[in-house]
Image 1 (cartoon, helix red, strand yellow):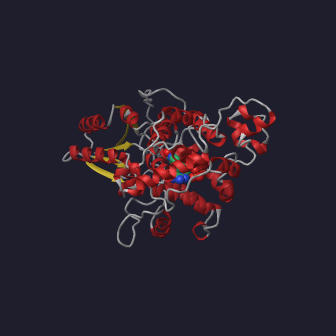
Image 2: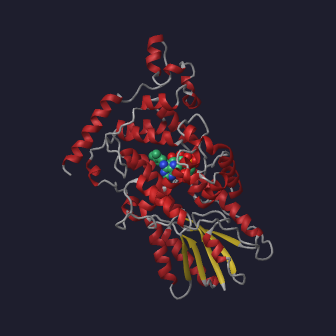
Image 3: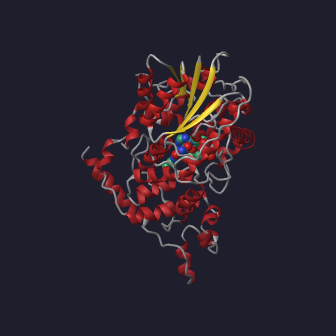
Length: 472
Ligand code: FAD
């Protein structure tokens, strides 16, 4: 008998349900496969640096599996239909008796898996696992059996279910024979890029970071997490996004360091768990509302908003040239590193939608094209939250003021200075409104003037939302 593990968004060998199940029969020959689908990635605007990160992590998985006598074959197919065809013939050729994979929850991925299962009927048995979440979608429901539409009650119910569930992490597979040669993974047919030295590939690097964070930093998380100049968050998102790390590993490590995490809602540990639960929330929501994968807003009437279609405004935002220092510094961080601090993602998303009145989908796409941690559910959830088109309990009139957000969360401008060297000489107290200072001092700044007046933009946005809602 031959067992085939299809690795997708689970590029690790520890705590991998599909891999573990495939290896549970000591007599089976176990093979693993990864299929790159560059055309599909392009359609979903996946960042080249994320593809590079996948490649680097795939090499690590291949090495770790080879040490255990398991071959990992890497194949490239243009898109999902081609991948299904290739897999079917691979299963036939290798006489695969059972196929194991961890479920992905986006609509195209789910359709692909259904097609594959159909095509393999009678030849290969398929085993799908809920692996990339602490609790499977559909496991946390309201009294009337529906998915929650608001986060806080979801979290309450989620924690209850979590205490009743087995979320133990699984060990890596035992060696199954001689170490085999590493076949290597050819370059993907995707624009070349670097993932960046800040995120070394491999689950060992990810686990080291997780351990250090839970031991040394999580206690201060609540205090520090909103200040982008401070490394107060875990920086684990690139690993979680492609499954180099599992949320069970995160939760179990957290619980090992902070055994009372669930009883101490005011603790840093609980605040961090809360973020992991946001991650779950958006995935559960996407499964309950597949339209979220199809560029639809959660609140239907927001589709009637008359958006500003200015390419110039969009580009100014993308390039970090809006004249609002906190927004510009954040966008440059994104463009240079592929990562952006959560507070800044909220500020930049709010600015694009509420100050420039640009369709949130343009921002969602652009983020995806740059992010090392690009993840449809989290990115879509974040954008719809910021745009007030989503499940947020606060309605559309929450509009961030980019200047006061900067003053609150980067008071001395340490973060801003890191990314906007042209503001080096502006004193701390003026860093959020540098032109006011320049004018007073009779200086010239090589930095754009604000492209909108926030007070006016706020009024225009409120009017645009109200006009759209009136016909609801
Ligand atoms: P930590 O604060 O250490 O949090 C731990 C983990 O929890 C993160 O690694 C992440 O997996 C998860 N998480 C944290 N916050 C959120 C959240 N609000 N929603 C969902 N999961 C969360 N996160 C992504 O992983 N991919 C995205 O594409 C993405 N796009 C976003 C777009 C917008 C507009 C916004 C507002 C948020 C987005 N987020 C996204 C969520 C969040 O900003 C990042 O997960 C976080 O900044 C990653 O840094 P960290 O690993 O240090 O987070």
